[in-house]
Image 1 (cartoon, rainbow, N blue to C red):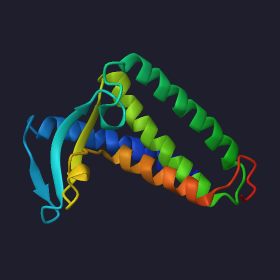
Image 2: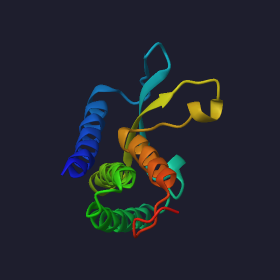
Image 3: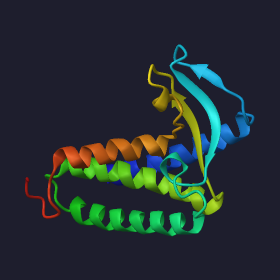
Length: 155
């Protein structure tokens, strides 16, 4: 139940933040927080990461929906095995993040991104994220780090 709650909190929390920044930030407005290390801005991503396939929103919507369904099935099957804590946590983050972004794709036609990191790496400074993106990255990292197979055996 904890993992379901985590996935729901990620998705609902991100949807709340997206709605907030859509209302509070004007297009082109930027606000610096955390000592200037984080930049708040409003960006609409019509593709997947870095706007890849932005001209194919229908395909992206169905692909992301299919991936979320696949993740949900794996998550459900893995959740029965109590010992897979890292995998279950990672899949919960992946599922919650995927649901938050898919909600945007279905309801808005694009994903709202709203912050970027200000670092010494220019390539990273140009990428705009949302909470769902961070959950997806962290979830993928945890799943790959734990390295367990579908049947719960260590690799």
